[in-house]
Length: 196
Figure (cartoon, rainbow, N blue to C red):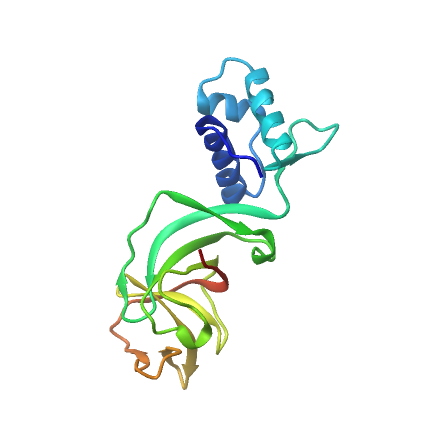
């Protein structure tokens, strides 16, 4: 794909964020309002460039119907996640391009950068970006991102006799046992990873 100018990327990011949040693309009017354009023709010009460069597809007769190009999509990069001990979950204001096939089914997706080596047995290495489907429940054996006392970690989830355990994929790390007094929340399920 051809490179984008700063304004083209801002519009593409806005469209992607709108689709992530609401499941539908913004109207030309919404794009014009967001970026301070007085007419829809300015927006149409940018959309045509993004279609031409392969970042968007557009229905021929429905000028308001846009979709992100089918091979890839942009999702929010929310920060870093520990593949080891839980770390502070700092949120970034960035987006990352991921293959469309990782975004399976309806729902919201986000990405996190891995820090640590506790999941190397699953091929999840320090510095990788993991793609996560946002959901609050998991099955035994799922790889999840969890918030443990407001810190994020990526582990394999198990619930045994009513007790939650988070397992690493590295023999050097012991399982994390979630006691009753520990704040615990499943943030999402692992869908794939990107390595640069």
